[in-house]
Image 1 (tube, rainbow, N blue to C red):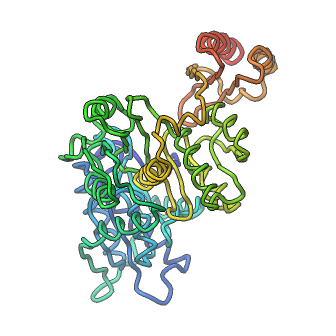
Image 2 (cartoon, rainbow, N blue to C red; image 1 turned 45 degrees about the horizontal axis):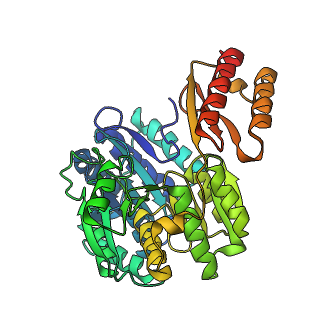
Length: 452
């Protein structure tokens, strides 16, 4: 069996790859593994369970809750809330485990299960591996040790969770948002209620789109993966700017008052300067991935801020931040982690802090985001090649060296094997888009020739 757990939990098409039986079995396995590890020792265990609005989340939530309760874990059902809200409540309520049902920015037919450890942190890889092993062992026939009588878990709805999360968000804002008109695109997702509430209570005039989830329309032509509606709404309403989340609201992208996109790199740059001004950017350092735009790196260097780069994936950003105590990190896609106030990417928190910077500075988002110039970036996927030889092919190394000489200090080349498909991603940045396309095309041909 291939590893069920990916970089962001277990995902697949709901009721095909990810079934009710699997959700129940993984939940029972998680309870047993954490009990073995001593997490529940000396007290009755509690879990927080939340979901995004997908229709499949209804039956998957029922399966997870049944599995946990059957294993002797008391369950607090917090309902439809963002992933970072479930992580926050897991820590704030002193729960032993958190479970979020969501496939984030994926299309509606998909769903996923993500487990959080005590404190709202991602489970360590070895615990995930053990959960998977125990799940497989019992799936093939080994009986569970089941509690009976008063030993079974109790289940109750915890409707206060949404309010607690919003209060937490408001408590960390450095200033109010009075005078700002902001359009929020909630992707018909998990933040459709809490995000507008938080922005409005912070003083902003809020216009919402994509905030009517029906279980089927999540991420459908809206949200952080489809910015067209937000761009049009910002211009139509004469808003100061717009904020877009994805289905589980762990991402935040923005649109300035002219309808121009402000991506995760630019958001990180704006927040880094704001945090340094408030003396909360520890070690004057930001963590980002190797896919961050070269313009971001050059802007931070100019401002005297150090950039630490990791492999692609917010989990690697988070690991680096936790290991060295850095306060800010993220990805171009809009996953922004503010570690003093969240254990995972939090799109609503990111949007609020971005808005707070606009309000405090009296400058437009367009002006603030101009701290960095995005260099043209071209990405070409080269399929059906031996991706394992990317780092060992002499011919490919020579082609890369030639491209780097041509680009000089104002360009960059990155060849990256896909983690899930038999292809190599060729990324080229240059001061000129035509040059970037030309170099990317030549490198793609070199990849096919050397690795095909």
